[in-house]
View 1 (spheres, rainbow, N blue to C red):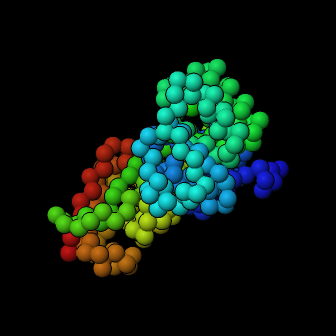
View 2 (cartoon, rainbow, N blue to C red):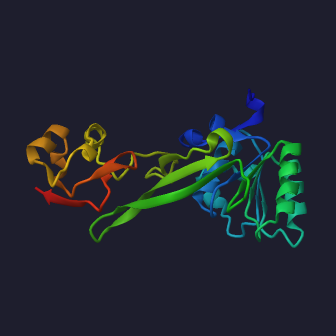
Length: 264
């Protein structure tokens, strides 16, 4: 059983993506290519008083980091690690609770073992912007969509992303969550799945299309009114094709599904 001293707290929206709902001291976490997801993972620990070093990220923006919730007073920036970068990172692990690292090249197995030993010895967390073979936890953005642009006008107001996490041991089964990264208010919060209109998800979960040979399934305007969707201007949803199976948490077709949308 881990104590609070063994964990670095993260933002609430990220807790379900991590074992113990936090970053575990003495572990390596790989967060995919450098992106706001990396800063969001670091924001929680820094907000709780941890020291963070950002290493090997020349374009790291202090203003953007502050907007993401990282206190610049608790940040150490090392943009150029030099040729002996593993030794520099090991020194940073000795002095900081969290090291956000983008390796300048693919680390060898020997370098990984050396730095993983330093992580365990100093009780720090190594958060890698990139791939790291053997990482206890891996997170990556697998889908994203910006919101705010209308039909030829508008401004970007937020980005909704699907983050998938997996790892070793009990965390080998992938976990997926939709997040605002950032949301219209600039914060990192949980988001609804944009692929399923609210109100239809319940119907999807109750249908078992694989038990039927359906050539045409329709939702009329009256049906949609019962779901509270007619107010959005949607007057008809039709699903064509037969032979359905479960995909992405609801049932859909083995073959591509033709979806026709009527707008009232």
